[in-house]
Structures are given as structure tokens and as C-alpha cells.
Image (cartoon, rainbow, N blue to C red; front, side, top):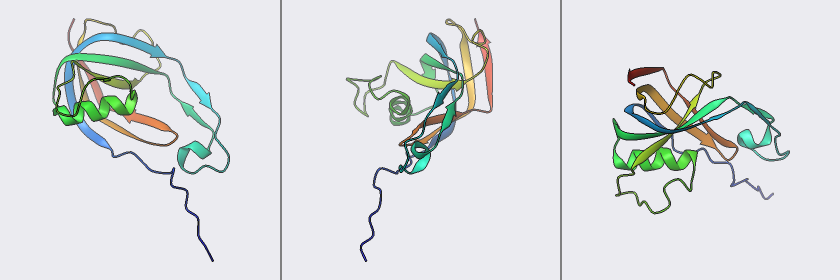
Amino acid sequence: MVMVMNTLASPIRPVGPVDVTGWVSEITWVPEQKVKGRPGMSGSLGHDRINPAHFLVHLTDYDGVTVKTAVMMTRYIDQAALKSKGPKDRPSFILLKINHNDQNYLKTDLKIRVVGYTVRGDEGGTWTSYKAIEILDH
């Protein structure tokens, strides 16, 4: 008997939890989206799911993470976000995915601390979580 394994199913290496602080330089709010699963695929890709409403936040002048972690967590959210950055180059920003239903909650030119931020995912997508967001300055 020959066993065939689906090699597409692989969770990403989790990041966090980390506490990251910085300035919101760019922001996009994305409403909740329903995503149809792909029958026969494993992991979250094989199931219908809901991507919650969220912000995509460019955080500049940041601290709380190493260069390697900054690159990894940003690329998990958007592979093309750091086109020319290698793992040793400090990115000028970190891209965060912050789930929130209120599109008016965050704005540019805020200094925030995201406490307990984590990034996880698999072939069906990337999901994030956090314990708290503190607005430090505006």
C-alpha cells in the first residue's frame, strides 16, 4: 500500500507573542470577508472560513522586535511588502494585521503599543491576535 501525503499543508512558524511599539504611518481597513474552502485541501484551505474585519498597519520608528522577527512577521502578512529587504536589513516599517470591527478605531499619526501580538497561519491564510492596544501619543 502506498500512502500519499498532501505536502501543501504546513503551518507557518508562529511569531510571538511580542509587544511592539511604533507610529502608525499608513493604515487600511478591510471589512469582514467570507472565503470558500477548496474541497480536498487540508488545513484551513479546505474549509469555508471568515476573515474578520481588520486593519493593515504600517508601523514605523518601531521597537520591541528583532530585525529577523520584523521581516518574518511582515512577510507573513504581505510577501511583497519588503521586496528588497533581506533578513539582515532593518525594515523601515512593520506590517501588522490588527483585527477590529470599528474602522475608525485607529488612524495615522498615532503612537501605539500592541501587547501580545502573534502571527500564525497555514496554506489557507494568516491570522493574528493581540491582548491589547495602547494609544501612547497622537
